[in-house]
Image 1 (cartoon, one colour):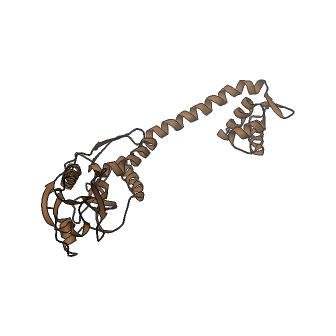
Image 2: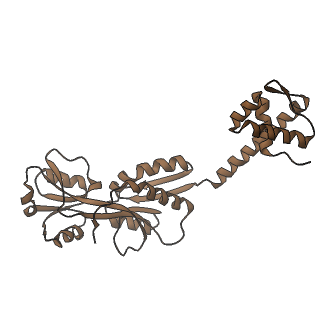
Image 3: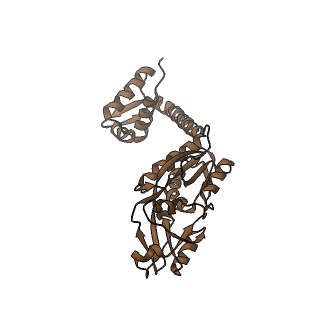
Length: 293
């Protein structure tokens, strides 16, 4: 005797519980003729009737009442099997991310929301205390993080994937006239030996007057608010500005490339999924201008 199919068992249990073929069809999202056909096939293969038709409804006969619990047990076991298979293939484990605070603030919220929804067994650990690009790179190289979110530069020793471009903006005291700004002290973000921003402007004929070098945007904004100089900062790094501080676009587009860095070699499925989600989320980020060289 041919074995009943799952479709036939679903049609039988739905018709028995709903009391009609039409209601079973709605429940199973099938046509009424498809449900009727499955019931006829099942009864034909078994060689006995399971349902008695009366008017527009159906009712179990003695054979149907004996077989209904068994059919429901089979379907319940199939559902458990599917759940176990899903659990076996679910991503799990820990993925550690090292990041600039600004990139973490702008890129990670939508990505973390999606990962929590689609991969609840996957756990992310984020360290956004890195204020220098070199610190993010060192964390990945040392195995302290699987993924780094950082500014990208040519010749990096890690595998890099660009996510977008972050434009630099001019930050100055509101009282300072813009034409006179370039003669004022320039407050530098980060290592004073990192001259990518000054060099990019020098190539266009603007030579900055070096002033303070500070490691955080908050400290720089306080100095600008105190009229100790002006700054050129990436847009993503900018918090709310003090009342007496304004932002201006640069005369030429200057940007920093940002993205992910990972070590060379095979990546775990969990790391690959996190990278793909970050890449997808970056589609809404600004990508105008020319990156720093």
